[in-house]
Length: 116
Image (cartoon, rainbow, N blue to C red; front, side, top):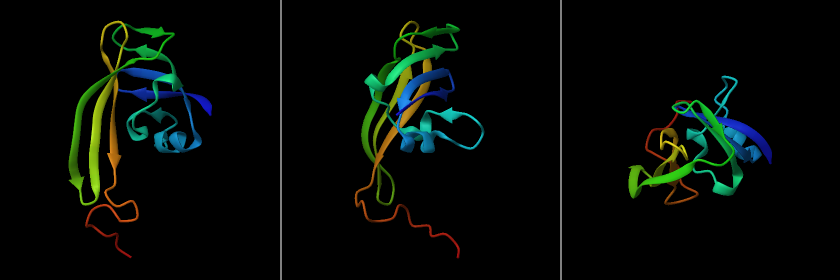
């Protein structure tokens, strides 16, 4: 675990991340981003910064469950949950998350195949 700053459109969250989460969050631009990680555990989030309040808070943001969908978004890929991290003080959206599952863990996602 490593304490890292992960960015969303409305601020950032400081959280303890695993190596796997850090790899997912790194889009190669020198910052880590919330969206690719999925849902963070509340006990792993240490602080949050809200762009609306222009303040860093010494507690995690709130998690607002937007929708529990179980919607098939591609062959073999289900959107299980959609939600938001929001500021503890003003409810401004810090970032969003999505939780996906594969119907068949060994199967591929979608029909498109890469060119060889």
